[in-house]
Image (cartoon, rainbow, N blue to C red):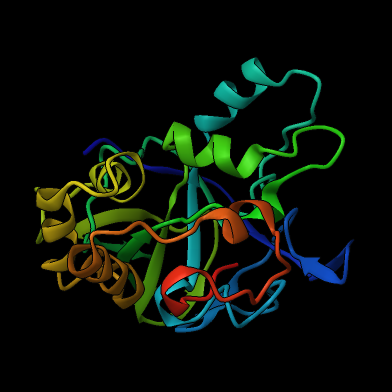
Length: 239
């Protein structure tokens, strides 16, 4: 794997986005080092802690290369880094190159890839692009989340390197294909279910699809209708 360049670390405050909802969608660049806890970066906030953040989604990493795609498809919008609410922006790493369960060393911190991001309606931009969450999902340019194996101080200047790969047959891109693009293909669902490094939530959903032969309703997550906290098909909450 070629050298990874960290372009920025971003944190944000939750803000009202209307309709009784809040989001920390556009985060600000951190110019100083931050403590990275198992729950996430110090001073970073989530719009709704029930459905965002937590030990298996402590840090969101998005390749900066994706912005060229969005600028070409939607030149009418501004696309600064952190437009997708990512905590970590880099050059030289993509969903095809990163595998579920990969362990990265960032300074003295150890991170493990836990799952791809599930785009939600907080990405949508009424009046500009109300279907952005669906477009991100369809494009596969979702980025991924980490769990924190060893906490510590982090900054953009610290080296970032892969130190262990245990599941080379399940890249983040492949996980996205199995979960969203071919969501009822049994072989893909079985691979997701059997990967112990994948987040419990994604493994549970894969198992539910295999048992029921049915796909859960994505409308609450992608469109925000009904309002957040809705119980979707099968009793699962989405946001």
